[in-house]
Length: 115
Image (cartoon, rainbow, N blue to C red; front, side, top):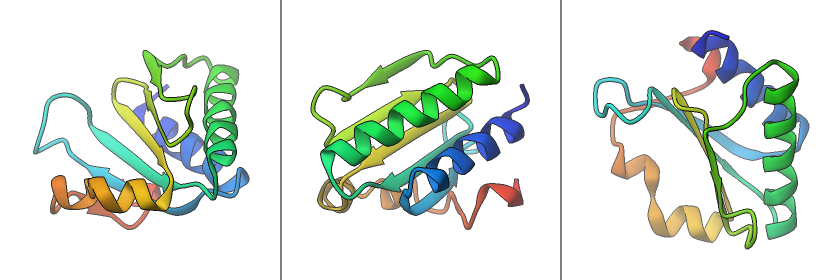
């Protein structure tokens, strides 16, 4: 599956799961660890875990398994690593505190469709 297809698939799963404030960061020129990051808010720890399960399930249906998943036990910040796409699901307070958009400054794109 091409990176662009994976981005769209993950973004669609997040929208279906009622993810809030979804942002995509194109970090290809900034780092070698991944190509894109998707950052999304959840309304509660349970919502974040549920969204992460939905993203993983949708990806598996299309033949992609995550390389790693971290944080599902607590649900405050779940990271799903697909290699070329990394998904951060966070509570708004956690997102504000870590401020990934500022950390990876200049990488934000309005949505995955513009890749």
